Image (tube, rainbow, N blue to C red; front, side):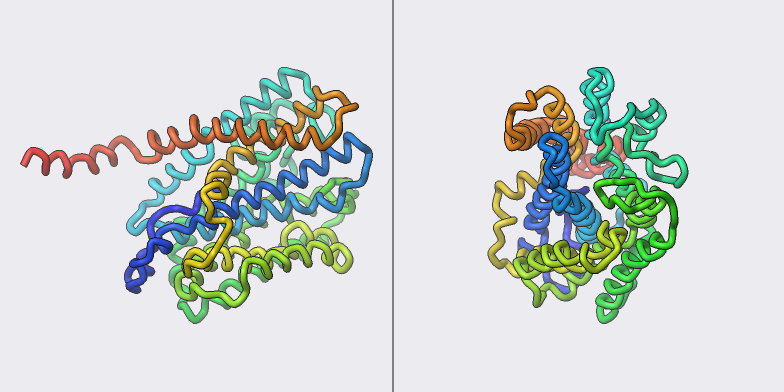
Length: 396
């Protein structure tokens, strides 16, 4: 889940639009990442609240799916917007791997020490997963194929990283294709990506099987959950939609739908969706258009230098540590849920997880993510090559 930073795309610079500093970075999108993790956090807080109090918090469960979809569309947008001219596929893959894997490894190790070795029961309740599930999660292959997929081993929330790695693997192939879309056809390209996002659950709707009782959809079968939600191929349309939206932001920086109306539409479809659509469509499809409008409006706020709370230094900082918080928060919930007395109010559990999780996320970001990117994002040979001209100039 990359940060919205990097250079302005070559096509935008050639259009003579690089004079505004707002075009070089889109800080509001970084702030939007904090919103995404907050809705995921609220979904998991509802899950633990239901277990702790016995109350029905199921109305909040879909927020987790909403947050993940927002991350995926944002990922496609940011990578396309900040793509480097002349960048090689191996260099890109190296940067993305260094960005996500070291923090994942630390978070996975924390689960092994605090949950597995500490005999802390996993949530949702059930028997301990086999070691093979932990290892599949460690190597981020646990949702690659049907039949043996799992999200109960290792750090469960890391299943989304499998999707991200799949997106990264395809990005050097997809980027030239998306760039070939003529500006007047970009809206049609976005519509096609939305249609593909709806086609996936439509096809999954025909799959049978016993209901799992999952908080994501109690009436969904194992196959429906896998293909419509966890399978990387099924989530690819959201990523591609983000790529097309990035090009739209370049060629059509102004949008008619603002941030507040877009956010209101997200809430409206979440409220109305369960009453008119089968639950398989609620996992991703029903929110894909409102999220696309929200991302467009958020990017437009920076491109057009209009007011945006998401651009504040605090929002940007929280967005920068959101990936680390995503990796750590569910583990924090499980540990504190286990050790806090049941007599303590559930709100205290939520506050403690949020505060301690943010502190741990800051440490993970500052001590692992940032140093790792500085040290390993560029190969030693490329660093030497970059330093050679400056050394020669100094000798001259």
